[in-house]
Length: 439
Image (cartoon, rainbow, N blue to C red; front, side, top):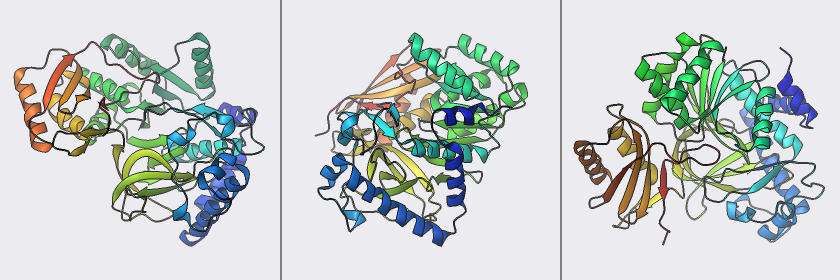
């Protein structure tokens, strides 16, 4: 098949062949060689931005540094100013890759990557998907993502899908009639892999479960399913693998950076150490040892157009104790730092704890398709759900009892049945939202 994907990158000024050659070189390093490479790249990228980026100079307060730990932690709020003020010398919006974050953290911003850095992002994607026999030039993707609804934006995405060998399933309507149409496509197209938002793909798997269909029997060419952007719970992974009949791979990334972690064929959530440096920090910005949970802070080692140095991505996670510099393993992604429930007792709990406890009860009988939890007051939570029938009193009492057991007593819940749940413009579903301000 003609390599449309590689060619489209080259024609847009992204040197993919050079980037792939560099990535191969980094992957081949021994552990010792890799540690030298990493220290050199960290020094090089900071020196570059201290000399060439006035915005970063201002943030650091000097033009040189001696100790990595003394460098400031960057947050999304540092990027709430025009892009032109954040670009390094010799870079402008015309000669870089420009995009916008989804804003799922509450602080969307426009960012840039120089063209070589963006080519490395794609080289990293190509390398990891290759672990599962996927070739972006020839493998057909079933894409479960949102799509712009305006005419120009829609056509632009469809054209990109054509170049990327992707067929897009729009996820804004996931009713049974629409899912029936999805199934028909799998009967007629030779898809190699599924890629997209976790919740939407799980909904499709539940639909297949109701019909007692294994997707691989309908579409024998399928090799793997890669889920991203929303939490993948173990029960959902089991459901996906059963109903699809293929391995399910968990991906963790950020558009402003790169793929951060990708499950390897051994089932480990392997961190991308070739283009990123990932640290876990406590609340006082101390570096935590492997095995301890803290804020995920990331440095982009190659982006010269725009600094992402010790950038707090807004997530909490743990690096496995068996991690090395060359092969860090993400043991657990706990959730976003701003997805925290503040409780009347003063306790703080990750919002996904509420979601997980509720999920274990609410989906028992297959009645509830999907749901979200909103904290509206310090002691009040609203559960919006889509289901065939309303939740009964027994289910509601079970949820309240479980929350009291795992979190605390005296919390008030209201249950609102909906035809469909509100998704972001990109099509993501936020499982837990707190509407109260932190003290």
